[in-house]
Length: 406
Ligand SMILES: *[C@@H]1O[C@H](CO)[C@@H](O)[C@H](O)[C@H]1NC(C)=O
Ligand SMILES: *[C@@H]1O[C@H](CO)[C@@H](O)[C@H](O)[C@H]1NC(C)=O
Ligand SMILES: *[C@@H]1O[C@H](CO)[C@@H](O)[C@H](O)[C@H]1NC(C)=O
Ligand SMILES: *[C@@H]1O[C@H](CO)[C@@H](O)[C@H](O)[C@H]1NC(C)=O
Figure 1 (cartoon, rainbow, N blue to C red):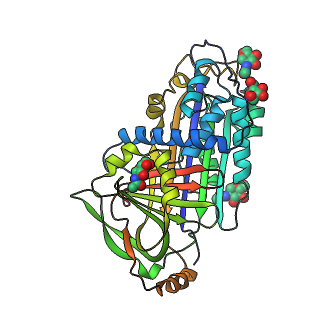
Figure 2: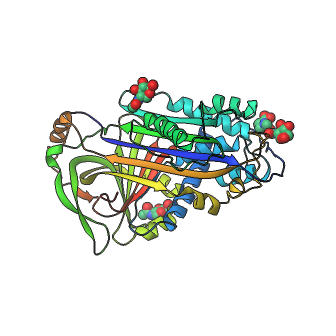
Figure 3: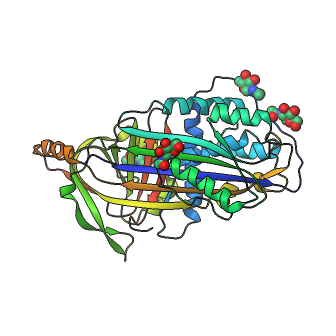
C-alpha cells in the first residue's frame, strides 16, 4: 500500500470576546517596495525560532514540542488586519513585520497561499483560514472583506449563546479541514464570544525514497540518560543529503517528500540538545541547507505519531504581544464594539510512517553500492522541521523527545 508516509497538521484558534475598556488609535506603517511571499520568509523564520525557544523554556522536561510556525504567523497577521494602535504595533514587531504595513503583509500572504495552492500530485498541503462569527454580530465591512480577500477566510455564523453547540460546530469544521485528525479543539467557550479566528495547516507527503516495511525492527530510543523506550525503527540504506556539523555538535539529514517539501532532522550529539536549542536560528538552518551533500548512509528513523498542544498565550505575551489580550486592546479595525483576544490555542499532530511495496525495489537497487554506509541513527531526542522550499516557509517544527509520549 502506498499510503500516508508522513503527515502533519495543526489548528490555531484566536477567540475574541467583548473587552471592557477601549482607547488608543490605529497606526499604519508605510514602506516602499513590492511585497512578495518571499519577504515573509526571514521574519517568519525568526518568529518561529523565538516562539520555539519560549515554548521549550516553558515546557516540562521530556515533553514533545510540535507546532506550525506558518499557521501561527498567518493567524496573527489576520488578527492584526483588524488591530490598531499599540495592539497593532506589538503584533507587527513580534512578527518581525516592523518595516512593512498591513497592506503589504496582506498581499504577501495572498501571494503565499496562491503559490502553495499549486498542489502537486503526490503532496497535499492545505493552509486555510476561517472565522466563526457570533450570529447577529457584524464586524466592520472592510475587515470582513480583507480576511476574505487576502486570507481566503471562510466565514460562518455560530450561536455563542449556546456554547456547547457553538463548540461542536467549530470542532466539526476543524475536524473536516484536518481529515478528522484534530478533534475537540475547542471546549468551554464563553457565551460572550464575538468571533473565533481559525487557521489550519494540513500536510500529507510521500517520501521520495520510501522505507521498506520489512526492515522495521523494535529498537531502543534513548529519551534521556536513564530512560529508554522501544520504538518501531524504520531502516533504509541509501543516499541522503547529510551533514556532520562537528563544531556545532549535530548531525543533519534531509528527507525529501515528493513535491517541494522536505523534512530536516537535526540530531544533536548525546547530551547536546540544550546547547543546540539555545543557538539554533534561521542562519544555522540555512548553513545546514547549504552544507549538506549526498552521502551513502544507513538511516534509522522511528515510526511514530504524536499530538502536541502549544500553550501559546504565555509565549506570545513573553514575545511582546500583551495588548491584544488586555481590556484596552485596540481592534477598532474589526468592530466598533470593544474586543480583545480571550484565548489562543494551537494543536498539531505529526505522524511519520514508512513506505509501500514499490519502495522495496528502490532500496534494493541502492543496496548494490559497495561502499560501506555510515549510520545515522535517530535514536535520541531530535529536532524536526518540515520545510516548503518554494515559498521558504517552515510549515512545522518541533522537538521529539519521546516518540511514544502522547
Ligand atoms: C483608523 O481608525 C479610524 C477611525 O477609527 C479609521 O477612520 C481609519 O480608517 C483607521 N485606519 C486604518 C489604517 O485602519
Ligand atoms: C503601504 O506601503 C506601500 C508601499 O510603500 C504603499 O504604496 C501603500 O500606500 C501603503 N499602504 C498604507 C495603507 O499605508
Ligand atoms: C468535509 O466537508 C466536505 C463538504 O461538506 C465533504 O465533501 C468532505 O467529505 C468532508 N471531509 C471530511 C474528512 O469529513
Ligand atoms: C557551526 O555553525 C556556525 C553558524 O552557522 C557556522 O558558521 C559554522 O561553520 C558551523 N560549523 C561547521 C563545522 O559547520
